[in-house]
Length: 410
Image 1 (cartoon, rainbow, N blue to C red):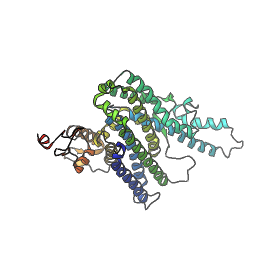
Image 2: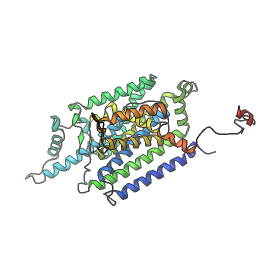
Image 3: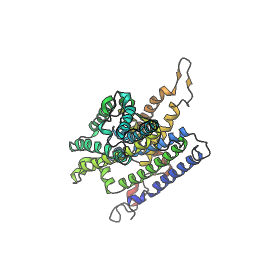
Image 4: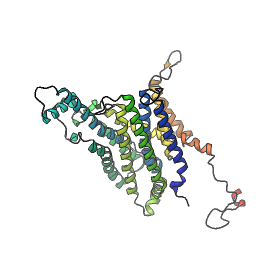
């Protein structure tokens, strides 16, 4: 018999093939490595879209498969961006400081260089000293580890406290949103060590690669995002295809029964919640160097609500649906809010899509919830005619004659 993972092989191969084809096509059409049909800014938009698709998969795992409506997963996404942003900003500032002090009559000491870097980074918030949380900012390896560890530890502590108390349903959603709000408000403070409302900027400038054009860097990040999305998709398929995935669906459908059967429900939830937080952190670490800046507004609770909307529109409970929803909403949002959508004059009033896009998005979420609960991904069910199997009286069960033609017609 085929394993559940093998049964999903066809859709997985199709997804990965389309992902590779998309990446190669954008590369060929890009300004950095191709014929220049696609602008560098749009290549960055596509790269960021792939990162959003990855965090949407993490959301679909906890919500679509385990029934945990987390309204805080974008906070983990933002934390991943902050962790890699600290190294990018530190190293880029160090290059500028070292270059400016190169012609000094007396070579600067290491402490003088460090003080100059701190003053350059934190002068905007009235400080000239490195906070303790920047202790590893000069180490790329350490910050890459923190991209995974910081979201993972936060999710682990929060999940342990919430799940062991058997908080579930709407109450858990409220708690995750409260966690996100508290984190966002903390980051807005100037004395938190992350430059408060100013956030971290200049992240698109890779240290040591000042001579490399942004057109080429954008293609590199596109490749990185595509690789992360492909690996993340494979990991998600493997998780939901085995026994672990079956238990998750059981928790989603009837948590009490799964607990009665002897499964450690809280452990399953905690492992999934923590693992998807790490996945979201990796997505954020790839996203914000393409965006060039990260600030606390990126981690506001509304961002996590948008994430849930993407998954719902794409079709929760099916991994490719989460990818479709994130990509669709991201690209359509860029079109509407980028001023490319023409305004609609109505005589006394003109509809400007920049102002009305969020209304359209909210209305779309309501309509999908009411009339198309399977989302855009449900269209594939229609194309494949995945209706109830027409058995025509074939055996259904361990015994012959479990379901015969006459019974099937009744």
